[in-house]
Amino acid sequence: MSDPLVFVDRDDDVVTLRFNNPDSLNAMTQAMGEAFAAEVAVLARDSSVRAVVLAGAGRAFSAGGDLDMITARADRGREEPVRAQREIRDGMRSFYKLFLSVRDLPCPTLAAVHGHAIGAGFCVALACDIRFAGLDAKLGLNFTRLGLHPGMGATWTLPRLVGPAVAAELLYTSRLVTGEEAVGLGLANRALPSDQVLDATRECARQIAANAPHANRGVKQALGRSLEATLEDQLSFEATEQATCFTTEDVHEGIAAVKEKRAPKFTGR
Image (cartoon, rainbow, N blue to C red):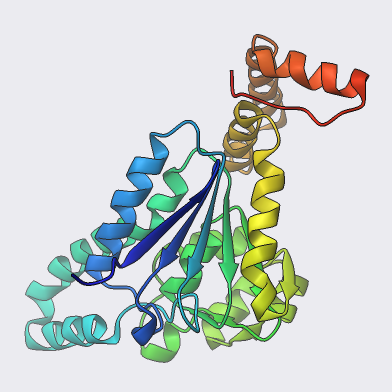
């Protein structure tokens, strides 16, 4: 029996999803995407999960789209340019959806990026809420260097993280950056030695998981809608979420913990 393409490791209320095809630097295939989306769907229904960490087995987070898959689509496009265009478009849209299902998780998500995170592989990391990267990691969106328009949400996510000018430079040039530079650009939260990245990311996930899960899920929704919302609309959303939190047991626990000068123990109720 072959190893799973996505390995799941759970530590209490923190789950790590690890791309698990190290021989190909975790290149993204249809089969890996289907396995990933299936695991995400299970986690999305599990209210006891408070944070999810994405990582890659072996020497890299992900080298991006599988080159054999890309070559097959290029050959198909050459053979029948008109007929193949719609077929390839629909196939790519379906492929994006598998990996970007990470955005459907209601809890906070973190990417532990070591080694290479290139093209579509980096796009999946960018779809997470938080990114920790190895100091010497190689990160970038190399689509135009392959003769391809960017995909996997790159032109939507990148400007929101780094602004339109920096996004334009990175997408036009296909330039790779180190983890250290990524922090300065706003692509990563922290840069650490590669052998510390996963542990540090999991520690951050545990810190998140120690806080009230309903409140954190509300924060995720609020951040996701904030760029499209007016201030008045966002204030209404925040007031609604706070009103809901005031009906939970967790808010009483949080207040009691402050008064008693101890760490809170939230139950999610």
